[in-house]
Image (tube, rainbow, N blue to C red; front, side, top):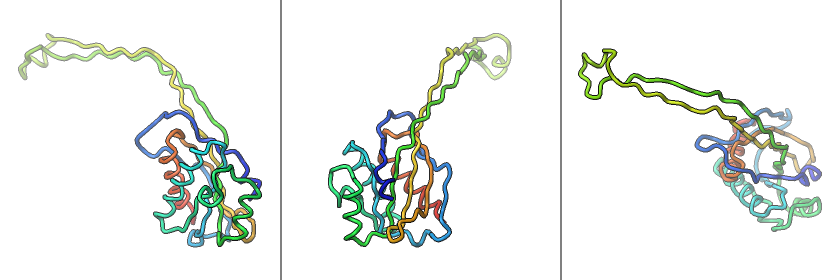
Length: 201
């Protein structure tokens, strides 16, 4: 668990898409010993040298879990502003009642490019002052809409989230996800937390 906690969490990328949920859980594994009703007294750990990113991610993730009735603590609140280490995380766990640790780590960035061809379409708009009958005649105006070809570039950040049992040190759940809006840490963390809770059986 501690080795995983030391992994680098990078969530600072550009805003690409907005609106609907930006973070999607792609696959997961769950230990048969672990059940959703057991998830409580959780420590959320985000390890990154960027203090702002860490605070935003951990706070948003913790708030989403709290809305589900789960007791949760952000590591920033109990470990401090320094990047979490094996010693600092271990020291806190040894004196707390934390039951599970959730660690989210950066899994790389994936960029795809798609060529979108030129688009040309002509519309018949009818006479300038049409009547019902004249609208259907060939006499009238047309409008042509043209869109130049372009390359559509999309990027997504891959994340791996792991849940560890503090008493046994065992991994009890792990899932991979991707986010199209890593620049919006609040939305991304909320989406991820909600996806994880709903995925755990």
